[in-house]
Length: 326
Image (cartoon, rainbow, N blue to C red; front, side, top):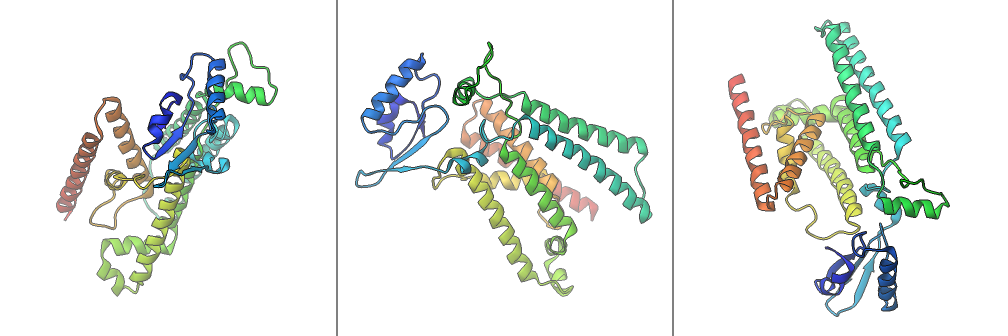
């Protein structure tokens, strides 16, 4: 729960409070400072601007304060948890080079084994569209700037004289996006270039046939759950860093979005079919749907119903395509 200073005492009785002093709590900076000083004199911990303090009361009425490490909080994103302008453009350049290299390598391998290849104009079009999309994302990320109050505090701490219009610091790609890219690349390599990935596809397509083919299916299932646990731990770390704390209900109903994202991304419920980039694209689609419903003021149960409808449609289309193919 995030509360302003005026509602802190009442909300603290609920058991968990994150005390935040946003810019609109008081009309002037001097008044904000006076009210913060008043709270400090009463023995409360008050942190202005971007740092939050989590407080919890146990059954005996004792106050417990929990702080997350500031470095750990950076993986949650935000203005401070971003890489900045230069590294963002460097990541975009690496992405463009990777797109061209993948297209070139794919065309060479197809020629090597006698497979049909796309026309050259199609290869150039795919490379151009991919590079333009990557550069546009980098430009869009760098055209988002730090909040004025945070930028002013940054300038004051480092003795920088801000210009007349205020100091504008590009945000760039947040760390969760870079982690997402890294996980996508590693998992794609694991699924397509390693024997373990092939075993997973084989087991998903037909478990009995995979076992008769000599695959240690129990060991494959165990390693699959280990990988899933690592990815869930990474997601939990990002969520905790974003919230500056953790509660027992964090991540509730996320499994519905995960299943729907996988289905929308092309993963078959019959097993053996699906890609990592497709699942990531499906996650973007489902998150865009959730944001759109939130902007339309649709309540949480309504959003879950919409996700369920999308999931039913995706499963229905997958079943229809499999029956038609057979």
